[in-house]
Amino acid sequence: MVKVMTKTKIGVYENVKQQFAKASDLMELDSDVREILSKTTNEIIINFPVKMDDGHIEIFTGYRVQHNNALGPYKGGLRFHPMVNLDEVRALATWMTWKGALTSIPFGGAKGGIQMDPSKYSQSELERITRRFTFALGNNIGPEYDIPAPDVNTNPQIMAWILDTYLSTIPPHERQRCIHVVTGKPVESGGSIGRNKATGQGVVFTIEQWAQDHHFDLSNVTYIIQGFGNVGSWAARLLGRHGSKLIAVEDITGIIMNTDGIDPEELDAYVKENGGVKGYPKSEPIDKDTFFGLEADIFIPAALENQITAETAPLLNVKLVAEGANGPTNTDGDIILKKKGIDLIPDILCNSGGVIVSYFEWLQNKRSEKWELEKVDSKLYKKIIAAYGKVQNVTEKYSTDWRTAAYIVALSSLEKVYKERGIFP
Ligand code: NAD
Image (cartoon, rainbow, N blue to C red; front, side, top):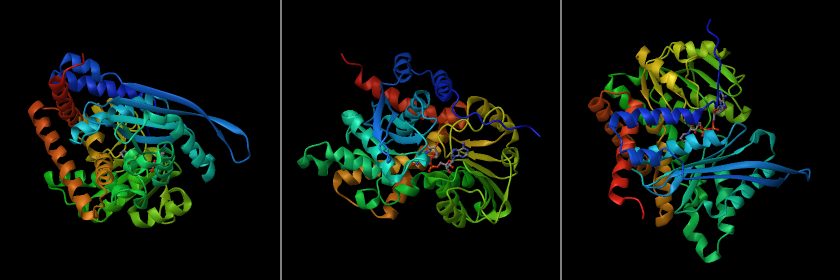
């Protein structure tokens, strides 16, 4: 059996550069625009002290990279993870620019994070870490300038602390018109209904469209998922509602399989109670080789970058990879998927439901509105399926793969804006 090696976080930004170069060459992107988009605009690194529960001080390193704001305010998540580093944040920020441009929402791209393992800290320590980082970021974020959101290991509660801290730093009479400084907030604190499931919902909308195009009956398909957090668990649960059969799940705690089917709702309840999929009773543990080699129709990577690589892609035995995670497939992985005839819904399309509904949250806050779930879902559906259609057309026009086509749609829009506006002075 081939030994699977998981090389997380190695040269993620290099992946972005390679993807960008391939699309730019093919579409003959204007060389000046290419130069501009090949660099990030601002890179903020902050070392900040936080008092721990026992009174000692720990120093943390936080990042915020702002890639581009030609189409609107910088926008992107905040990740709390031990492997957060500048290379990774640059890559994630750049993908956000492409995502906004691809889905026609008026946002640029940013991303940030704190290098730490949140499981090692108490709730009150996490709150102080979050608040201190927000305070240190100061005016580098703002409701019309740069708007954070949840990502790996961050959630609505953390967004609520960011909101509260940011508002505390501005004059009282300006506070109520600034709650769109962060999205993915709890609904009671100004969040949008439907934001929590939005990324998983978008993943499933794109899978539904793919299934329709390929005359696939979703009530009769099997799927495997890597990552059972926000994106993975919602994608699993929403796909499960079609009657599709979940047969294996990997997360940080372990990998489980049941070829008779795993109930995603039950697994979700188990994970919330136990912190991970490991030990889920109606399943057996398997190793990584077995997981990647399982015969299934759909694989949804929804964890971290660089998971489908030269080592793991040859093992895959699926018809479709739907990228819930950002950057789960590296360039080698892409080449192998293509050779094996495995279809791909690329990350900047597949997982764009999160930023699309973040945009809806931002709009609701600006207008003091509260939309119903039906409105959020139907507007999300329209936006993501419109982007899907554009990408599909470009794959045909340029006879290219879906990732490159998604880039071409995004880059064409950015190129147009730069040509119209020109460069000051
Ligand atoms: P999360 O923290 O809610 O969940 C992450 C999941 O990945 C967990 O189940 C965790 O156990 C698992 N995981 C972590 N390290 C792993 C490893 N080494 N091997 C296997 N599993 C591992 O995070 P999330 O918000 O669901 O984000 C997951 C991915 O989706 C990330 O790539 C993120 O950038 C992307 N994404 C998230 C959103 C969003 O709205 N949250 C939007 C777009 C894209």
